[in-house]
Image (cartoon, rainbow, N blue to C red; front, side, top):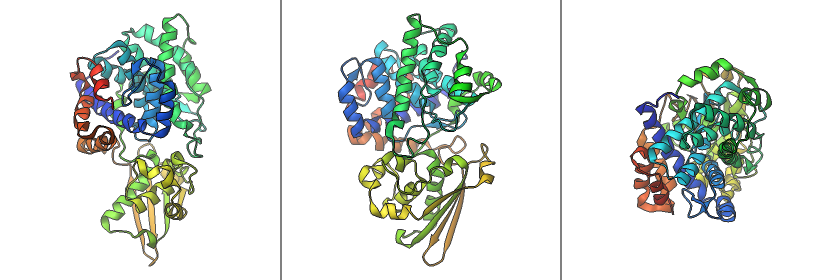
Length: 425
């Protein structure tokens, strides 16, 4: 395993802090409170909840919380969200082993890289969602790191973990199925279990990673890309979000923000909004989402929400917001269209074009390439700190700043236990 350079560790601390903020926000969701009350039967502390659970269940609940409000980071080359899959089991294992902050951060990085490397080398089947698939590899790698496994023992655990990924559905969230939020938690749990099983003597399929991810869950495998990934720091290519909705909605949101910055728009004056974008984003075209998660995965609803409510934050996708007749009426006037020419510009460019048609006949247009928070357009740290504050302040008040500093620089913590104590509501 290659040594981890300090700039990588520093960036990983930023991702850890951002992810812990998402976990805090997720734990306030009613579904999280209900399932935590059922399964928090004692064990290791849950970060962000006044409860404890056995390590595998702690990994599951943490992964579920981290994706519940769609605020966690992602990675384009990996094709998914590697951080939560690695961080959730790493937190559970660090709590069980009373690990140092340095060991926790190292495990998060090792897990992030292992999962991303698989995600980058495979081609996921179009009907599958990336959460819960190759993330199980990152989860197992993170746990193996905290247990001090060498490369050979780690590989045995990863071979076993390969067969414990999920058969996920890309359309579950679009149709209102919040089961999609379970995917990352289940992979975190299964990754931890994979290391336990390997230590107990069970074995996976030798060389099973390219089989499962190239033929079963995926439909192709690039061995050269997988080999090259060993010398690449995927974590430096992460994206971080400000809005509580799918990344692919946020090109349209950025276009709206740019138009509003030029001149205000009265929502009642909008007769139509037309969005042209690349293929995967164009699938988020539902105008009448059935549930909060479907609203988070709807360009029409996200755009209408921003125009009418002034934001696209957690509460803007609550059940009462989803049912708001004014938002639904405006969303009905948003049309999303796939432009093959824009798909052809990927992966170098992720383009969204938006036309805002007003009652006086005016048409205002904006094209955006990429989104703020992308690797080439990173958010200033102050912006991410403000996002963390919005996640943490409702439960922790002015202590949010202390929590940010601890999460941002975990290497300074002699024991990760200090995180769990500080992040307990």
